[in-house]
Image 1 (cartoon, rainbow, N blue to C red):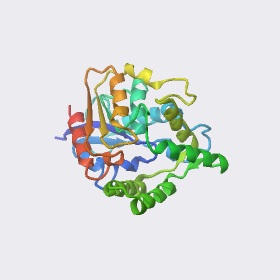
Image 2 (image 1 turned 90 degrees about the vertical axis):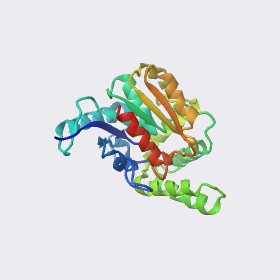
Image 3 (image 1 turned 180 degrees about the horizontal axis):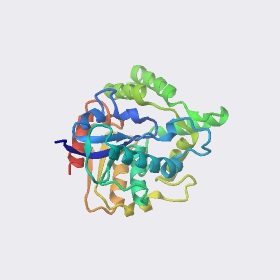
Image 4 (image 1 turned 30 degrees about the vertical axis):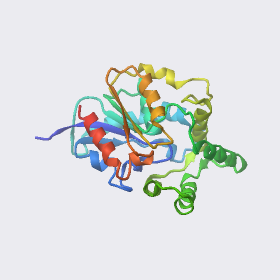
Length: 287
């Protein structure tokens, strides 16, 4: 008799493709979770060439990409073409980084109706973020001088890696090796509009729409399904406090907030700490 497995949709973040869940420095979440769960890895359109999309930012991804991915995921699980017998309930969703913000907000709006959520390294507020705001501001200024449609994340990331690894005094060499491995395996250039809206979040201090006039945090109280929030202790993109801001806003009676010690943003999905993420996901999605 075929074992019935629970379904999980995976959503990746802003500067990475869906390959972020595959092998890089470590086997990847897909390999660690696939023995126990039926998985579908969603691919955000933001990492494809979209000449007909005038404003490929977070808002458009939320309104166009996420509904399409949800339909594809449900069709995939229903079709049983992958040789697994899935449970009848709606898929759960694991969203990493921006993927977690998309998953939580889409749930609040009823765009998707997952059975439960795991929000992994997703920031909902942006107070005192070091380093990255200056990089984002510089990248946007360069894009104004040279009319770029996409930010060359892969090239910039390689330059940053070689500088930090060989010329800085960073003690976290392993974290840098994780960065390099993920950059090679899953790094993606991103549209100017996506980076511009993310920078708007930093300016406002919270997630908002492209104009900055709608505070998306105010919508999260509509979420009442089970949600797990996971943060890395050393994550400077999604600090524990910024992840907890989402946890505190939802109305769910079943919710958890966990901080993985000594873990950076990228180490949540690669390197030695990946196994702790997989352990948490396995426990949460098995309920």
